[in-house]
Amino acid sequence: MACNPKLARQIDVAPVHTAFIKVITHLNEIDVGKRRMDRLLGIAGTIAFNILVIIVAFIVFLWWQGYV
Image 1 (cartoon, rainbow, N blue to C red):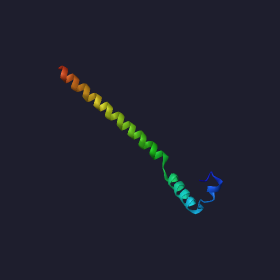
Image 2: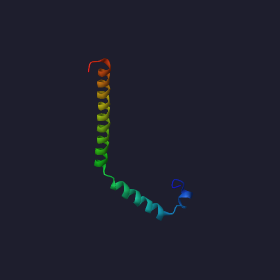
Image 3: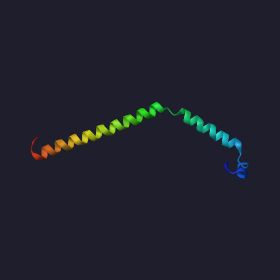
Image 4: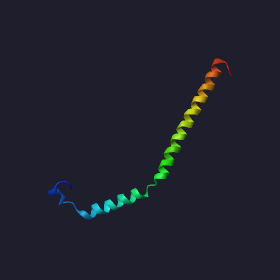
């Protein structure tokens, strides 16, 4: 609505400003370092789980073939 000059006059500025302040406050509270660390720990956990599954599968394969 704001791009159209006739419709832009119908916008009530007070609720838009209040919503803008809420959004800016929320975005400023986000800790980028914590989100980055959480993402890295998630990736590390996924890699560790996959390595564990591969090792277990390899041991089961060796046991199945009679090497263990």
